[in-house]
Each structure stands twice: as C-alpha cells, then as structure tokens.
Image: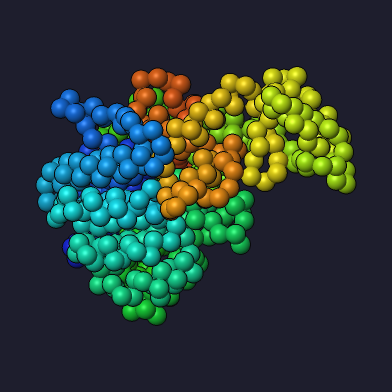
Length: 470
C-alpha cells in the first residue's frame, strides 16, 4: 500500500481524507470537529442543522406558522441558527487542525439565504463550502464574498464545464477542489443524468480522468479532485494515489463515517448498518427532489415501491381501451380504466388498498385509508424545506409558491422522515419506517474485520485504520 501523504487543499496541507457532508443532522460539529482534529477535512451538514441544549440534546423544531410560507421562514431561521451552532462546535473541537467545511444542498429551501446567514454568523470558523444536488452557479459568488474556498459536487466533467464557464472562472482563486460523486455508488441524492442507466454502473476512473483533462484545460491541474462514493479501503484505490495522470486526489468517506462513536446517528441506526447485506442499498427515484437517491431498502422504501406499483392510468372519458368505469372518491366521480386494470384495482381494494389518489401524470395509486390520511396530513404540514417539492407541489418562488403541478402522492415528505430517523433513535422501529440513506458499500460493515463483534471506532481510530490502507 502506498503511503498517504498530505496534499494542499484550501491553502493548507491536510490529509487527503474528507468526511462526507451527509444530510439532516447526520454529520455535525461533533463528528466534523473530531475529523479535522485528526488532520483531515471535517464536514458538517448545514441542511437544517440542529441546535443543542445545555445537556447536548437537540432542540426540537416546532413550527407555529399557519401557512407554508410562514413555516418556510421559520425553517430558514432554524437552519441559519443551527448551522452557526454546529460551525462553532466544530471549530472548537478541531483545535486549529485540519479544515472545517459546511455542506449544503443547492435544492434545499433558501440555500443562498441559509449559507449566507451561517457564514455571517460564523465568520472565520468555516474554511470551505461543499455543495451539490443541483447546479450551484452562485456558490462561487458566495464563497468569494466571505473569502472561503468552495467545492462543487458534480458527477461528470460535463457538469463542471457548465459551472466553470458560466460562473466559476470568475472566482477561480477560491476553488478549493472538485468533488466527483459517483452517481451509482454514493449514498443520498445522486447526479444521474437522463443519458445514464441507473442499473449499469460505470468505472469511475475514465470519468475522473475526463474531469482532470478538462480542469487542466482551465489551468486547474493542481486543484484537487475529491473522489466520493464507493470508497472503503484505500488499498483498492492505490492506483489513484500519486498518479500523475489524475493529479492530486483526495478521498471522501461518507458511509464509513456513519459508524463512529462521534457520529450523531442513533445506536439503532448503527446496529442496523452492521447487519446490511450486499444489495440492501437501493437506488430509487422516489425523492421529492426529483433526483435519484440511494437508501437502505427497509420497510419505508418497500412501502414506496409497493405504493408506486399499485398504479393505473385513467381517463375522464371513454378513450380507446379505457372503457371500464370506476367511481373515485366520496362522490364516486367516474373515471375509465382498461378492463385488465379494473380487475387489478378490484383485487387491491379487497386487500384493503381502497383509497385512490391522483398523481400529476393522470394515474391513480391505491393505498389504505390510513396511508391516504397520512399523505394528505404531510402535504398540508409542508414547511417548504426544498426549493421545490413534487410531493407537496411547493416552490419557493413567488407569487404562487407552487411548482404548478398536482401534489404527487407517490413521493414523501423528506423533512419529516429525515428529522424522524435523526431524532427518534430510542425507538428501534425508526430505522425501518424512515428513509435511511447509505452508500452502496454499506454491506461491508458486516464483512470488514475492523468492525468484528460490533466494534465501533472513534473518528481518530477510523482515520488511523484508513491510513493503513484499510
């Protein structure tokens, strides 16, 4: 195994080991501060980050607004105050070692307002911004305004080319690195394009090499590329280390960083990770963002799969083969199915899936009355956590604050489930009935001897282990 040497990133020498940012409350000031203290780059999530009380418990976010717009403003305020809190904690724990980055999603609610507010309230404490889930053209402007480096998360050279030509070339001096996040292997939201097959993973080396060639054409030959998604043992990546063809490369650890003593996820979540088998992480298209995402195929995902499978197309008048009448809703409004679809619907109703819910695509899904009430309640309680949401039809853009489509019951409230799994850790059912993001290598916890007998390392122990090649 080649030696792992420090590289220059964000103006300083650091270990080329980066903590993945991860979403709501899954990487925080405690985890990122300890990662930086070990000489690497710690990354806390600035996506609706928590504020803790004097006993270290997360203070619940309680919304008082009567409208989505009012709750949206409350959420922005929570997010800014939480991000500042986590930045201060990370800075204190790092003790001047490594680097501290804040991770945001460009498609989250008020992304520019949130990160601007966090940077204003935590001046000098954050060294870099990582940002993905969209095309964050304005990221470079924000970073330059506060003199911090920025690290766009992309999944192809094509995406970086667009970002560079439109915006980043104007703030090149603050580009600290480019995160290549493999869209088939990374956890959370993935950057698969319409031209890429989600069922056919591609070798990351040619894709990263293409990115490096493009970067060199822009004079960015020494700007680090951070490989994210599918990284477990560095001995499996030693051909990438000190490779003159690729130039300076760092490695991001998202999934492995979940299973440390400083990781804020619940004990139930940690125990679940130790039991995963190959294939348990599912690349799905249910997210209200519209992006693909990778999550553990638990009861939550299985219910979404089944919900989407109980779906039929309908017409409001007899057309073609759509001639079989069916009454929908309390008023039994007539729609038309094909005869085979009508037979399927009758079977679902017998099984208890008697409530028909309209989708934006002229289809109906069939769910239980209890699930229908839950879906409607979640849609009504929307606080606008995304820039736009297909589940609730929210959009943060005036004047309508709507994406112009019907709310889509095939998706789910992502804010509700991510808050629930992050904060309901005492309930072991939380890991089965909530969205549990993970990279596709999550099954390796069960086979890696480092985690034998349920061993959970500290961040320091994990980084020491990684530096051995494993």
